Length: 244
View 1 (tube, rainbow, N blue to C red):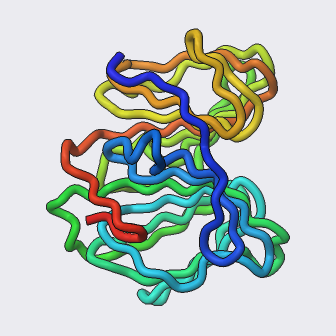
View 2 (view 1 turned 180 degrees about the vertical axis):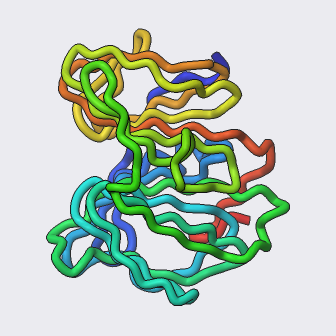
């Protein structure tokens, strides 16, 4: 295996009063081609991310609790509820805001940034939203696997991406769908798992590559995401809200 390490997310403040657990970028790992950033965020009512610009990447926001309202300079103004997805491609540039929904006491979710290949850095920005009921849920031994991207999901990236939200009862075994040739991340947001000889607990991420599948065992009732993407083999130049 070329890469197999566990990293801890660090808590930082972002936006106006928002809190995030950031797995990367950070001191230990700057990026993980094609991935630029992975945050678990907690946004209370009255706080959030007012208008700010982006360019050069795609971002997917997956809601775990509450709701989030997205507004942008393309005219989109939508709200996604628990279990739903907001996804944009910033391309050559967009301005947007992300704030808790009107009835949400807290907006809790995960945001993932994926680098755009250099040939698409100057492409037109775009936005899509998919509510929870339009995402496929598959029963597996000991729990379920929700398909966020890839494997027939209507959520589309300009990079090959597979993204699953997995819930397991304690002492359950899990074998991932095929992730051959992809760089991948397992991020635990509830409970803990054993991946080989490595324990991965809440707020930690396991990074891997050069495997066909990932197998693990839940040590408690557990929830985690598994995301895997095809590396571009291009430099990731991350400058705050821009990825050049």
